[in-house]
Structures are given as C-alpha cells and as structure tokens.
Image (cartoon, rainbow, N blue to C red):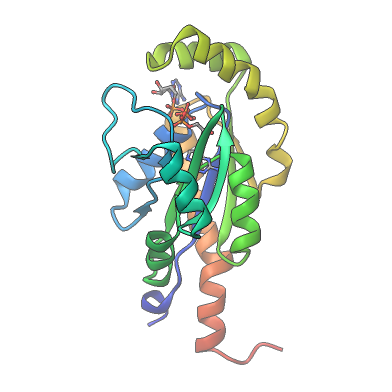
Length: 207
Ligand SMILES: Nc1nc2c(ncn2[C@@H]2O[C@H](COP(=O)(O)OP(=O)(O)O)[C@@H](O)[C@H]2O)c(=O)[nH]1
Ligand SMILES: Nc1ncnc2c1ncn2[C@@H]1O[C@H](COP(=O)(O)OP(=O)(O)O)[C@@H](O)[C@H]1O
C-alpha cells in the first residue's frame, strides 16, 4: 500500500519567541499521535514545569559540544546565547518509519535542515499579529524574566525578517484557525512531497 511505504514529512515550524509555535505544534501532535516529536538538546536551564526528555534534553555546554562534534546532532545553532540542536538518530528513524516529524526550531536550524534533507523538509513560519501582542504573550506565558523578555523582543524583528525563506507563512491571531492552517500545510506537504516518491514507485509511468 502507498500509505504504508510513505516516508514521513519533516515539518519545521519557526517563529519569533512567543508567537505560538510550540502551542500550535502541540495541538497538531495531540490530534495525531503518529506525529513524532523531536526533542531538542539545549544548554539553557529548564523552566518551571519543563521536564528532561519531554520539552528538551538539558545538557551542559561540554556535552553539547561533544554531541555536535561527533555528528549526533543533525543541526545545531546558538539562539539567545544558548546552544540548541536536533538529535539525528530518532528523527531519521521516524521519517524512515513513515512518521511525520515536527521540529520547533529557529530559522538557522531550518536553513541547515533544508540543506541536510531537502526532499523531506517543509518550512512553516508563524507570525504574531503585532509586536505588542507578541510582548503580551511572552509576559502572559510567565516563563521568562523581564530581561529575557527584552532580549527576545529585541531578537524578534531579526527572526521575523527570515519569513520569505519559508514555504508557508501564517499569522497566529486566532489559535484555532492557526492550528487548522498548520494542519492543512502538513496534509498538503504529504501530498506534494513524500507521497510523490511513493506514487512514482507504484505507478512508474510518468513521462
Ligand atoms: N536551531 C535550533 N533551534 C532550536 C532548537 N530547539 C529550539 N530552538 C529554538 O530556540 C529558540 C528558543 O527556544 P526556547 O528556549 O524553548 O524559547 P521559546 O521559543 O521562547 O519557547 C526558539 O526559536 C526555538 O525554535 C533546535 O534543536 N535547533
Ligand atoms: N493565538 C493565540 N492567541 C493568544 N495567545 C496565544 C495564541 N497562541 C499562543 N498563545 C499563547 O502565547 C504564549 C506563547 O506561546 P508559545 O507557544 O509558548 O510560543 P513560542 O513557542 O513560539 O515561543 C503562550 O502562553 C500561549 O498560550
């Protein structure tokens, strides 16, 4: 069957901090448990409520550098002065097993992923409705200090400037609408990319 042999889609979601990408990614996974969650490695400290191995693998800088040097990370980047990276093996296994993968990573990671796996990666950029709303979401999340929020707001415009590099862009104003749009992107990507290869194998008659 086509469906069983299909390779997964690697959907990369990027956004300025606070725009809602984790919330959207979580809603997609909740509705479809076959979606694989890539858990990144980071050198930042856990926030209250964040669990090791669930939100991130929290590692010290030395371990992070060793993992990067030994090729255990598919991509890695420095964001807000901390190291963040995507573990290679679980992602490759999930795609090969036909599971779609969602990565919540920054624009640098997207660029690296796109180069590393051009056939698999689809990019979705999430914009906030305004800078004022972005700041109010960062404050409302209650997870970062004033200093950290100021840092993220300062970085927001530079992150936003990369939206034209992505395949799809949505404005996260109404959350339900944004989740529906992200789901539509995932479905469209399955049809446009992953399944095309499988259909070519099933029907090798294209001119
Ligand atoms: N390149 C890369 N960026 C990542 C990775 N994991 C998280 N990020 C990005 O790092 C930034 C900070 O993430 P985080 O500390 O969780 O803060 P938040 O985005 O405000 O929730 C965000 O832009 C994430 O998308 C990763 O594995 N690789
Ligand atoms: N459409 C929305 N309207 C209002 N609040 C939202 C919306 N989307 C997300 N949020 C809230 O904004 C905050 C930041 O969202 P989050 O998903 O953590 O952002 P990111 O992962 O992009 O940093 C969270 O408190 C979340 O509940």
